[in-house]
Image: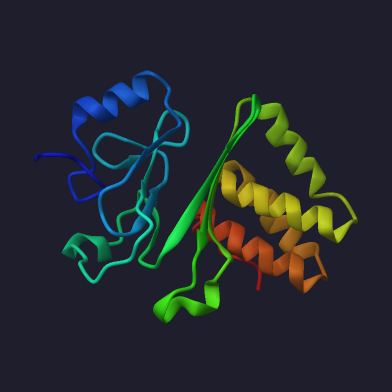
Length: 193
């Protein structure tokens, strides 16, 4: 069959345009033997955090079969993983999230039960602004939880507050979580390290 995925052609125009036009935030499909997630994109693979749709290939079983294009570094490809995994999808009236947990089989035993990827979307931007305010908390656990959530949002507008906290914090655990969050956001921002 002639389908579409996250290869060089970055999808069929009619499907991508329909998803974008209907303001679909997340498109989940499964076919390949690995997990992949894009940044929000529009047809042609152009990253667009305002209008774009995030696509997830939610296959949970690893395979030795890997298409040649999966090793390319497309700017719209946020994450790919070739190990066995499960996904947890949660939705409330205000928030959706998709969390990928590694099963730790074969060569990946060290990641058993660990979160490997996170995608988060809030309905209201006021909730996101509230998260950014939480970065000012002196409670390290609150900061780490907030940083984790901001990383899952993958919004470029959260980069500057995270970099600012990185430069001000003396807590290594906070700095480590910021590095993970910035990697999820795909930030080209240079950290003051």
